[in-house]
Image (cartoon, rainbow, N blue to C red; front, top):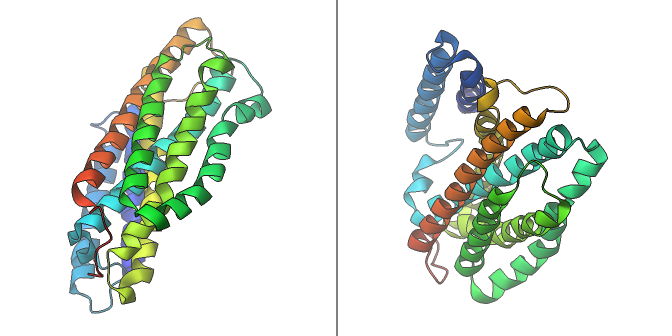
Length: 272
């Protein structure tokens, strides 16, 4: 129970600090206090779990290189993936003045490509192992994310739909081998915990994606999201912030790919 409270408090405080910092400033007492709470809560959580015989999360699992790489990759994919959906939806509505339905249809290639690729990824992982599809998926996702840097306030559908599709394709290709790697890297009796930790890391990626990327997108507006259709100057400011968010997302995916290339073995290892 205490472990769940500490992680919720730590991650919640971190997300709050990241969101509020752009509006209140990094020196704000509220933001600094939230960051201190986050650091203290997460540190106490790790120390508490290390002392328990039946930990909520056995943090020693992160000593296993492949397990760590798979979890960092999962966090990075959901960090970039959710951020792309949320802030490109706002781009289509606030910058280009499209309806919510139209905006949803324009990001639909992400979900369609992911749904089509995920089953193929599972079969591919069973045949050749997890490392190659995970690595290729991360690289495709990173390249497509960085490719979206060319978008401008008046870009048309033809300029983005295939990049969105590649983002979904890369994510779909990488997700199954990530789970397989995380679970396969530990002893069988820890498989359930490993799966739960991996799912939590994905959820953490979503939280941080919305908070961090939102702070970057709206940095030019003082951290506060503008309301309604943006004028030309504000639209340019939004797109510049979106480009900053895309750089961070793309580089995070490339860093995760490098970690996978170094830490995940080519062939499945015996249980650790």
